[in-house]
Image (cartoon, rainbow, N blue to C red; front, side, top):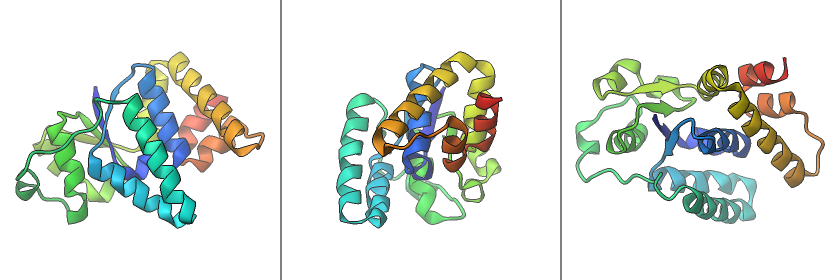
Length: 180
């Protein structure tokens, strides 16, 4: 399954790491566009002067880890597409160009199911998407979560517990499933 990750699920860090760790378990193939990665870098500016530089370094590492994930839509594709928010058309174009099956986003209202279905796509909320993978492959998703938790502890010097970490990352149902 090919999955286009919208900027809103790539940034913040814990959510991105959960999604990519699950992809790293072979449960799906992640996709994004250069513009999505650029939006990530620009969004990180709100962290201060170092935020964008750190994001660009993380983007470089992400590109290196997933060299076939970046999709550049062909010229003209966006012109034939419509979404309620014209600023999101590039996301739909990348999903089409990459032959994605799903767009993972928290912006459900910006990606109407009927419009996506016309292009052979669906959308998923990241919590439901990851919970579905946990239901199908609990060991793989649990392993991914363990790795994300260890990295969060290492980077923050805080003794995070899995449930609060995932709840903060807007993954409350996955958090409950993994810690029940």
